[in-house]
Image (cartoon, rainbow, N blue to C red; front, side, top):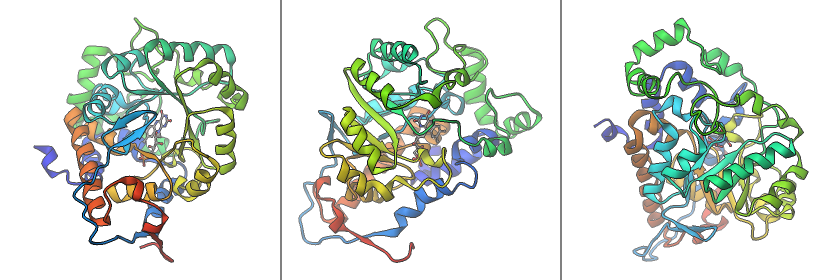
Length: 386
Ligand code: FNR
């Protein structure tokens, strides 16, 4: 019933704002410092307009996209988002199942509250995203564990050498671990849906949600290595560690968080299987440009390496613009977490269906049958963003 009013991905943000306690919504919606990274992610799309073709017979259009030998229903997937199970009951599982059902990829976050094995069991096609410390023995152990769990694709997020500014979270009253406070209690009471559907259910079935992560050992589903401890030597991480991972990991290896074309070249030479151009949804270095700005230069450095993109995608037209600028595939973050929070698996499925329907309609209006027809000739760079 709630979903009937959700006509676009942006409607999910408005609904989640009403559903989630303010500190939690603030954590998801926020960027860092002055939010300029997050805002650039939206602004850049407005700098491009379309130049559609006409009378081309678009009756055979298909958005099916092949990536790493796998054919997905659409050219987009679910980006990794940490501590999702705090916003939505069993959030990671919900997003993984909805994505599997729709035949699109979902990336399980390494700073999730759910054990990584659980998601691999529920949705074996999911990918796994790791945050790794610059410590070879721990890297070896974690990579081994991800392989044993059955994941075929490992992502290393590389734009988090140090933790981003927590200023926005402090202002929103959000902390890790989430501390009971008057503000949180008040917010929970005036938004009872979250309290009942997520917090109470989690508390009853799994205990108090802490901020430990999916590296939690089997048999200790909630309490585990503390996430902040895991970040310990993350600032030591360098290309040598990536080489180590490449030698050990036989599946697809992807690095996420590239913005500089030169880094794309080094990544390719290190032997990764793909890269995700991203400014982390504007949540790490404030003022980092949208990846869409450097995407064409990165594609030029990447040879045949698949190049993926995320950040600010909210419409089918945004997907087509990213593909026209050279992306092979894209990921969407926040809207799917909002959907999981509001309406669980059905909500995420609804969000996926909205975006897929928009892409299909936009392809018809662009005069194309295949996504490979999206190229720079289909875009016009405006002098001023609309
Ligand atoms: C993230 N992101 C993220 N990235 C990652 O590699 N590991 C992680 O654990 C997280 N956690 C996370 C939590 C939340 C609440 C958000 C919103 C984002 C970044 C994410 O994968 C992606 O890069 C951006 O969210 C994409 O931008 P949009 O689609 O949210 O605008």
